[in-house]
Amino acid sequence: MNPEIELIWQEILADFSTPAALWQLAIIAVSVVIAFAINGALRAYFLGRLPENMKPVLGAINRILFPISAFIMVTIARYVCAEWMHVGMLRVASRLLIAMAVIRLLVYGLRYIFSPSGWLKTLESMLAWGVWIILALHLSGILPEIAIALEEVKFNIGKNPVNLLIILQGMLTVVATIFIALWLSRLVENKLMRTDQLNINMRVVLSKLVRVVFIFLAVLIALSAVGLDITLLSVFGGALGVGLGFGLQKIASNYVSGFIILVDRSVQIGDLITVDVHYGVVKELRSRYMTLRKLDGTEVIIPNEMMITEVVINHTSAEHRGRIQMPIQVAYDSDLEVVIKLMHSVAEKHPRTLKTSSTDVFVKGFGESGIDMMLSFWVADPEEGTAALQSELYQQIWKLFKEHNIGIPYPQREIRILNSSAVSADKSVSQP
Image 1 (tube, rainbow, N blue to C red):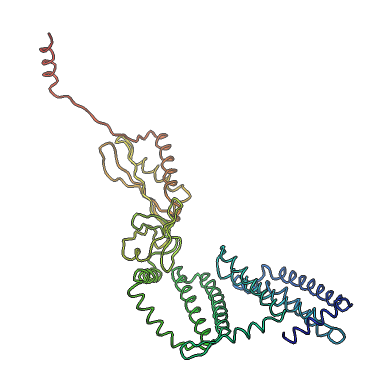
Image 2: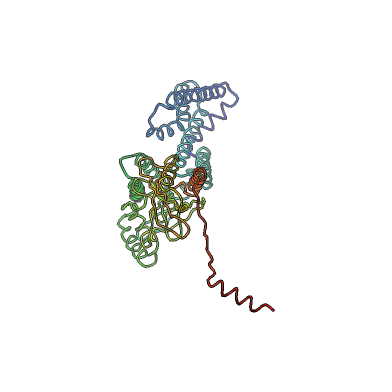
């Protein structure tokens, strides 16, 4: 057992029935209460006063402020009281507070990096249990013995001798560096997504590139820290390129197509588009696929390659607006000036109609039953659908037409009977 840990447990057992134990428990309780008060006061002071970009940092500090404050006070009390009594309990309490700070920081980092999900809760529980188990092994004095046992299991990878302890340390180093890289990339991504000077597609592209670069650098740093030669990655990169060229053509094509779509800005998030038989709003642009939310609420996942090779109709202009055309037929005896005026007023009064764009009423032609008209106007939110809007406008137009005696024709046919006199004569001859 570690001599320091053995000494701590000897002091705790020796002080268990003495006033020193009560003093140490009182110091721990007072430190926890003061740390809790400091945490609450600072949270109330800074809440709502810091800018938006500082809130992630404040959240991290808020998670570890309580255990770190208590740890500082317990440590100060430990050095002060060590002159006249044992402080084994204070040493154990300081280690417990450090473990609490580590767990809280890790959980906050995971929640900041990843979206809430079931596997995230499982990962948080695994990390918390892992930290507590390591602390328990450390306090019990078993951890050094486990490290020695892992170090004795040796084997060779190529010409390099390794053991289980080095492999475990390397895995922890890689995980830690990737975790830090993901946290830093999330900070940069949030800052980029709040930048109004950049197009939404460019922001998405830069965010993805930042995450890839940070992860790549983290892996390189971790491998160098472990002692592996990173030039070995060139062989892996060549093999990966061959695999992408032969076995993963579709996947590689989708990734390249997604990058092209994000860069050339042909389709943006929020656009109302038609792809093949699918009509809806672009909800999400991923590196491999696009999520299209149809107007009935369902979502369609469309591979990015299809967006490049197929014809895509974008119903949303650069100013993010959509044009709606409504055909209407009126009777031939209607006053066209009144019809045009009524249709024009109905469209302009609706709240969804763009007042900055022109509302037009056209005479399309003369049909078999009436005059064909076309009402054309623009809306700022085409992603909200047009069925309900057209229904409301048709109802209002119907009411106004009835008030002004404007008829909406229906198909009519005239039947003419030729040579009626000859038919009558034939009927009279045939009678007995």
